[in-house]
Structure formats: structure tokens, C-alpha cells
Length: 314
Image (cartoon, rainbow, N blue to C red; front, top):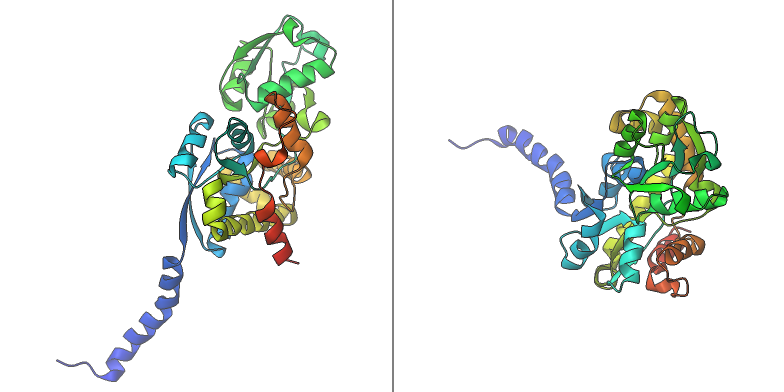
């Protein structure tokens, strides 16, 4: 039995209303993004996905937690498209891998050296046990703060241990005396009476979080890289300017109470690089950390993409 036009009209209207949405969905570019953990260090990545900034710029993002040692190989093989661990990308490029850092979201590491309540100063750490991830950013920051405090790192017993969550638990149990903690762990520790001995932000700029990718993608899929940069810039602006939305987001996504979320937002905002340009001093710190202080910055960074995007936005 043939349907009349009047009967078909609702169907036509339904198809017409859904067609643009379906077309838009088909137009999204799928990308895989690696981060080392679901932590506040990668807030811009998680917020860009959850708040729709990637989709706004034509990106369907899959975020994958990946151990840093696997990241460079995965970028080169195409198993992932982007990685947000700036220090990992920098180390890979220093070693000769065809990868580059495109943006920098934060001017330094969040890592803060925290000790048990009975320890009141760096000097009190002499002969004590400090947990770090040997060779990682937290290890570098801890040794720097110890030297700045007048103590030789050789006078401290360093032990290798996993992330901030594991090290914080170990300090709680008393099996270690101090450890560098990232956000929000050092905020929680301070509120619980542990002693804050110093932060990376007090002493140094250091590349830790930013968009990294392969040189092949920068050369051959430049427009996609620019979409990633645009999404990051919009996300950073949202984090900076929309505290009333960001604090509940931190509570929901990272399980923070309101007080910790408010303080974490303030710390993140203070360390943010709003235009996402890679800071030369932050890159130089990584080069020095790797024993390559004279290596040209363009061996690690390709800032031309973010510069193009910023010019387009003027």
C-alpha cells in the first residue's frame, strides 16, 4: 500500500533533521592520544574530550593510558597519533626519533617535594629515604630541590617507585620519609599535615605537558595537527576563565573534594601557558637534564604549527 505525502512528511522531516548531525559525525577525524595516566597533569586533554572541544574542531579523540617508554615507538609506528608527555617527546627527539613537541601547556612540573610531618627542612632529609621514579621528571625535581636546600643528593637514600599515588601511600605508611608528589596529591598531603619542602614552580621552568607528534604528521597532515592545537587553546581558555565550571569538573572526573579542586584549579591556572607556545627555557631544562645542553631547540620543538594557528586567530 502506497503512503501519502502527508504520511511521509514526518519521516522526511526526521531524516532532514538528523542528516547534518550524521554528516558532521562522518566528518570527524579519528585520532588516538597517549597520556601516561588519568591525572591533573593532563587536565587539558581530558577536558578537551569531555567538554567537546575536540569535536568542535573536527576531532574524534580516543585517549589511551600508555607507559612513557612505549610512547615514542607507538608514534613512529602510527599506533597513536599524538602524545601529551612533553618530557617523553623531548627525550625521544634528543635520542634521534622523528618526533617533535608542537605546543606546551604548562611552564613547569607540578612536582612538589613533600615529607613526613617530623621532617621540617631539606637538611632533615640527610640519611633519609626518598622515593622517586628514577630518571623521570619527579626524580630531577627532587634532586634539584635537595641541592638548592644545601644537601648533596648522595647524602639521601633514593629508591625507585611508581607514580604519585603509590609514593603517597608509601609515605603514609612510613616506609619512606619523603617523595615528590604531583597535583593534587601534594595539596591533599599538605592538608593532612605533611611538610612541603619546595616545588618545581619555585625554582625552574620545565617542559612536562604539551602536544607531541611525528614529523611525518606535521609535514603530511598539518591541518589535523592545527585542529589539535585549536582544541587545546580553547580548552586552556576554558580552564582559565570558567572556574565555576572547571571546579565541578575536577570533582566529578578526578574525584576531588571541593576545597582540593579549588586549590588545584588555582595552581594549574598559575602554571598554564595560555597561548601554548613552547617556552625555550622549559625546553632547555630537558636538554640539560639529558646531558645535551647545546642541542638546537628545533631538534626537539616545531613551533611553526602553533604560530600559524595564533596568526589565524588575530
